Length: 159
Image (tube, rainbow, N blue to C red; front, top):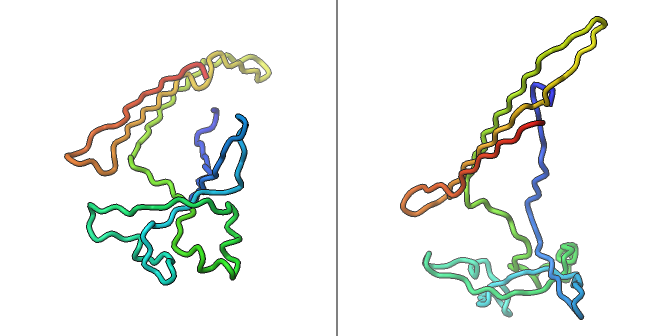
């Protein structure tokens, strides 16, 4: 690039629903349903999920979950008839990084200048001449100390 500074914006969506796909006669079909989970053991009235059902008493305990196929459009949850029916069910996932990464990028550009009368100028070498990207990743929480999980260097040349 010929610019001194580069600026990029990336679209980071936060919540994700897991669509359920099935197949019939070898053809994939969208079920129009999404995956939701609820604790198998429920302590709320009439078998409803209570907030405490998502908590454990000991960090070595796990919560047994039950899968459910639910509509993907969340507008049905806001319907007054459904406000309590699905309370406490987990419909969305949130991506959480389990590693931390740093990428350092270097770029080298140089150009001999051939100038002619009348302001004509020709670029002879590609720009940038070389790019070097080095990525280092390590686990966010590593028992026994930090170990590198990724060490990658990519060198590209010729624009």
